[in-house]
Length: 525
Ligand code: KIV
Ligand code: ZN
Image (tube, rainbow, N blue to C red; front, side, top):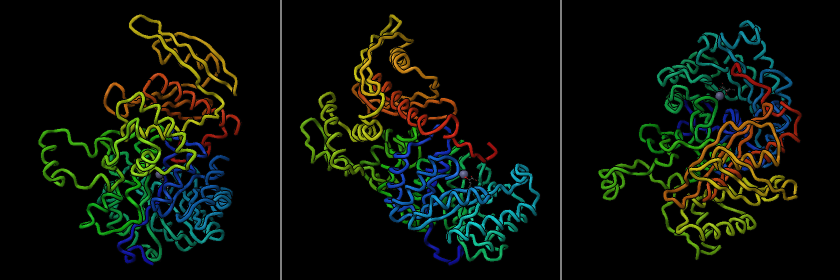
């Protein structure tokens, strides 16, 4: 099979939400959340899931191992630096997969070569030895020259050839700092295909970061030049400005298939659900005007646009909402809707729940329907996300909360919180009702975690809208996020705060201070 000539119409999708995406400060996911996201990626038809960086922490190792065991169709890949210890650890985690892959990398640009202090020859030897080692363990090996787009062309050709000869089956060309532009991205792939012996025997991948907002364009340009694997993340999650967004490249290839005749195996109707789940578990909300999955992506506000869309939807829409799993309202939900209607509605929204989960969601749906005139799709999505995030058997649980707020401060909160099954009451004042409620939590459960992010989003319009709240806490280098949704913003905020604390407690138990963070770092950080 050759990258340049076959199969011309098929582009492999390599998702790195759980590795490069999760590496984004604050996007840390729990073990269960990683398994859930991996399951959804597998079902959506992602060809390769980069599940983590096994040597980085015990948590990463456990997640990659478990994802490998559970994967149904996707190839499962783990990341390893260019040394035998990393590669062995990676193999230990991915070897359980039906189709495992080791991804090993080293920074090849002058700036990155200076970090391990290797000269060109020493680095070339290291590449030969480590790729050979990986290939002796696994017959599917990907190699990346990190910062490829700032590596001297002659040296890049030399090391790519060495990696191919040592047995790499995929060569990934990372634009690590989001520096390249479409024309250059394409030229680089073309040059490698022309100059490197054996280049037509392997797959070239493109891995772009979005620092200049060109990641999607750069990835597509690389494909036009002969790359046949795109590395990307859901919602473009990733360090700094993020990675290429999966939904953007996949939908671009689909909508503009006339000029980009390449096929992926992605079931695009699953995009919206995955986007929502990744936003919820990572705590990184999607910007309203984000391409494909933003809240406004299919909304038409201006009179001219609305008029046009009503007459012929194609006047202002280049794809249908249902193509990405955004369904038109077929079933209206209200307080008289039963369990079967709820199940059908959730299915429409791309959410399938086990019977016990459905029962719990149904109870909460009924309570919500009593409080709200109409329960919108967005309300159900928020409710399901909250149910999946906040477990009723957690160590800390909010039992009761009352606040007194208004123009005359200080605001007061009165709370009952259960700690390991025992109820405790307290009251506190604060600078606003959220501060007062958080002070109650801190007094009942003293801790030194710092609140780094506190975000509130209204799920729908109207004053009876639910609020989704996400918070990010930091303690001794451990970063956790928490989320919750409720029609009462103060309740949602307090639950999100408690949710993050529960995650922190689990992290503290699993690791000594500092060891659960990504102590193994690169990108010069
Ligand atoms: O951006 C990058 O260079 C990476 C490599 C590890 C592939 O993520
Ligand atoms: Zn990257």
